[in-house]
Every structure is written in structure tokens, then in C-alpha cells.
Length: 128
Image (cartoon, rainbow, N blue to C red):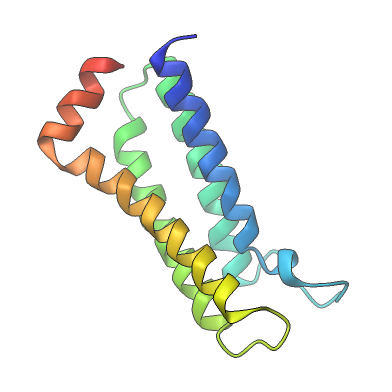
């Protein structure tokens, strides 16, 4: 197992955690929840985007870095929309919602920082 494999698996697993930000996760048996809700749609796009990024890292594709930055920005938008839409929800603990969103925003921010800060990007590129 190489460093590239570990990075690809980590990106995939981190991206899959955006499923927690879908409205279905908080639905608690309600049937009026749709994947086309902006919260669900952005979260699913983030999951798909990070899955594609993981594949790009694994295959050494030249397009994975711009896709990772774009996906991280979509993930930040999904987190903020989820946080704001659940700020007044009685069904979820406000601390849990806030912590979940802050951790996802921090993870997406780390992806953006590593890929946009030249020394970090050169280190990563040199190890992949």
C-alpha cells in the first residue's frame, strides 16, 4: 500500500462523511424529505466529487486537484446550508449540528489550503 493509496482512501472516506449532512440523515422517519432539497443535493454532489477526486489521485490523473478544490467549495456550501437550515430545528441538538458542520468545513478548508499553498502542494505532489 503506497502513500497514494492512503491519500485516495482518505479522500474517499472523508468525502463519504458528507452523507451525514443530507436531510435524510435527520429525517427520523418523516417521508417528506427529498434528495433534490438543496441540502441533500449539495451533499450528494460533494460525496460524488470526492469519490471522483479519490479515483483521480489513485490513477494519477491531472485533473484531480482542480476538482478537489471545487468539490471542497461545494462541501463548504453544503455544510453552511445544513447548519443554517437546522439552526432552528427542534429535532437535532444544536451542538451536534454545529460540531458536524464545523468539522466538515475544517476538512474542506484543509483540502483547499493544501492544494493552494504552494509549499504544501509541492510536498504532496512530491509524495504522490
